[in-house]
Image 1 (cartoon, rainbow, N blue to C red):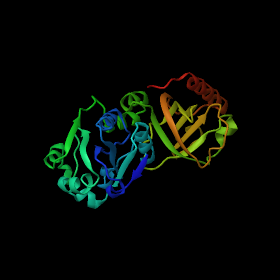
Image 2 (image 1 turned 135 degrees about the vertical axis):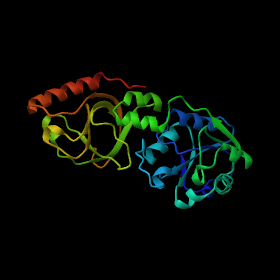
Image 3 (image 1 turned 180 degrees about the vertical axis):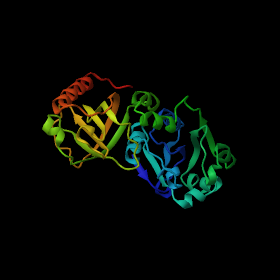
Image 4 (image 1 turned 90 degrees about the vertical axis):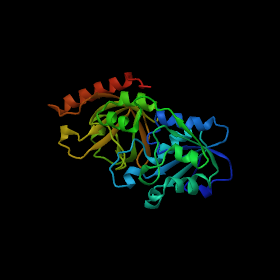
Length: 288
């Protein structure tokens, strides 16, 4: 997929544009993007980075990184995406200025967005503004209960199976594999320790079943209380996997919360419980 940061980098074409932040690329986002794919023009996604609310000084824990967002958009069949840097200048543009400086130069003829989409200075723009500017602006109906806010809340409370039904895919956490304390290896369960980007949402502390690299994974999220830990760790034990993951980006699907993390009376008790977690992970199925 071609990814650009300005309208001028796109070749000349009449375009159907999917407009939105698309954090998580959930079922509602898919509906918007898919509407452009069947519109009969060059389908193009326009999204923003950083998240507009973050750029305006608010804390937003993202469901997916920009890299993952672009991968998910490409999986839908999109061949080009414009990632607009959400700068103070862009935030101050009126809806009319946005239409004339972004959408018109890229050849937008059809613009598709969610029914509640707002844009421009003070979020004063809507699809009616775009229609007044001469664009064929089309609203896609909202999917009941599906929103990035609802999904974030479910992930934060560990309800990853419910979040998956709104995403249309399993919830995920990703990061770069870094060196840990190697304690899992001494216990017989070597884990990949993830350095997760600070802006990315991480599920509630606990033990989860999931998958990474098409391999079942038992995932621990928390502070490792059995060993008196204080720093949050995200660790994945990839069942039956052999290979060096250090320094690599790893996307881990989170399928099911198995239990809370806790301290044990002995290391033998801990090892026995991890063994049970592994068996549950082998039996787990993807929630979607």
